[in-house]
Image (tube, rainbow, N blue to C red):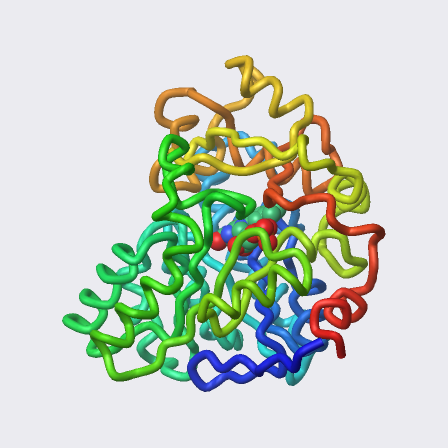
Length: 365
Ligand SMILES: Cc1cc2nc3c(=O)[nH]c(=O)nc-3n(C[C@H](O)[C@H](O)[C@H](O)COP(=O)(O)O)c2cc1C
């Protein structure tokens, strides 16, 4: 196996060019992030909806205003807990937080992240146009937008330079043709060759020609073994972001039944679904996904209880389903009635292994 380069984003350097993708809800919490950081990669906590399965929130609270306020406060407190726990488990590792721009408590979650020791912030599901302003008091925190097109990177670079005099410390380019979770392209555009792996060389050319700084680009989507990792580096990426393969590890924060469901997945189980956020998502087929496809996914008793997203078809027009509930159910082990996000190459793992073993397989170390 060839020698792998280290990865530097902002002032943070890790021995291996591997970023563990942020995965919500509570698929990548402190346990997984710390284990990846201890094994020489960048570990990432997903900040989305952490309050759901925390001691700070009671979904049965009757007063809707109180319930909503409690939910956002629970997210804040639960993120502090995860950051403190990750630091305890990995005192010297490099730990990031993934925060969706589409979350209504985005600004609070960014503040908590920088105040409680995150080394990097990864931010997608929208353009993180205000991120430098929100983190100006902690310039050591590296800022990494997650994008799926060069156009999005151009908009971010121009806005950040004009308003804040700085550029991103790195980009994650997520390939919507392969990645798990919410995808940064409409379902009808997914076959367009221009949005796949072509984006990395195109973005690198733009960054090199327009700015003098070398900005590291990390490739995400479908990276599941050493061969796909090497292919991404050969395109010019400085690193890879891996989500799905980290689910079938001992340290992944999800329930064991969630990990087993991933372990037993076959290529034909991976499907596209529509999400209330207005984006397609990639997930594993189960009874819940079949219900969505049949057009009646919501329990009639379900109501929006937290007003958690900027845009939500479930809240605004009772279309689709409550994504918080669906992701939370799955991560607690109800893999029939919950939403199990997965990348297109799900089911590659032979067994559930410690993160250190998976990292050794990927790096050859
Ligand atoms: C279960 C799951 C949950 C995810 N949750 C998030 C998230 O909360 N925020 C985000 O930006 N990306 C999320 N993603 C995307 C991952 O961070 C990563 O970019 C993606 O999984 C890469 O593709 P791969 O799964 O083929 O490795 C999620 C992916 C999965 C599989």
